[in-house]
Structure formats: structure tokens, C-alpha cells
Image (cartoon, rainbow, N blue to C red; front, side, top):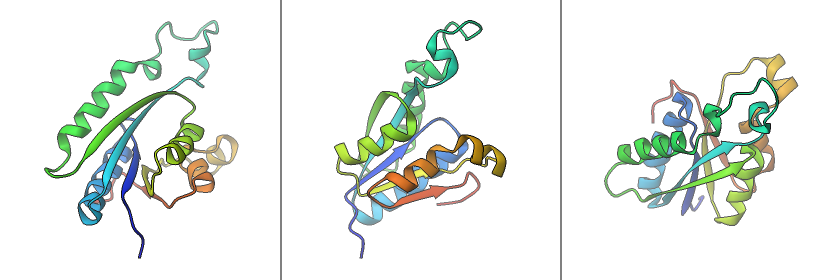
Length: 147
């Protein structure tokens, strides 16, 4: 049987990441595990490079937005579930995999975005990146999935 002590949940404010957090809370209670709730300020977006036409202060580059997302989720955590938060600046896929190694994570629970086949092929997705590179199991959750 799998032994889970530390669960990583990347959060971006989407319905998928909220559903993933609900799943992680149930799993944390079952395994008596702690949750690391992660917000990544994505610095790989075009506007964050300071290019002409990019927003002066892009929403996705807003640390305060991340704090609000993490705080809201923490308030929803059931009593007895240990949750701590981490915010990093960088590229979502590689930074999630890096944090798995750095924090000795046993399980990643993350949202699965509904990109079409062409977009997923052309752009890839964070969840696909993590599934193929993380050294631990990765559970992807759709927004309409109940925990």
C-alpha cells in the first residue's frame, strides 16, 4: 500500500484546483498527511517579459492574487488537516517538479484543464508536464469531480 505523508496541491484559483484541494484534504485525513498548497506566479507569460503591448501589471504576475487564493483554500480546509503554503516565481511545470523533490512530496494532486487536443499538442499542459516528470504519483482532478 502507498504511504503518503506529504501532498502537494498547486493552486491557481480555477475550479479544477479547488476540486483538487478537496480531494487532497480527504486523502490527507485518510493518510494523516500534511498538505503543501502551492501558488506559482508564472513569469513565463509574454506580458511578464516587459514586451510592448503587455500589461503593465499582469494579473497572473500578482503576488497578492496568489495570497488570496491560498488564504481562501486554507480557510476551507477541514479541522485537523495540516496545510502550509508556498509561493514561488517561475515556470509552473518545472517548479512543481522541483518542489516535489525539495519537499520530499509523496503525492501531487492537481487540476486537469480541459484543453482541446490541438492546443494540448501545440502548447502542452502543466499537468502533462508534471505527470511525465514527477518522481511520485500524480492525481489529476476535473472541476466537476466530487471528493
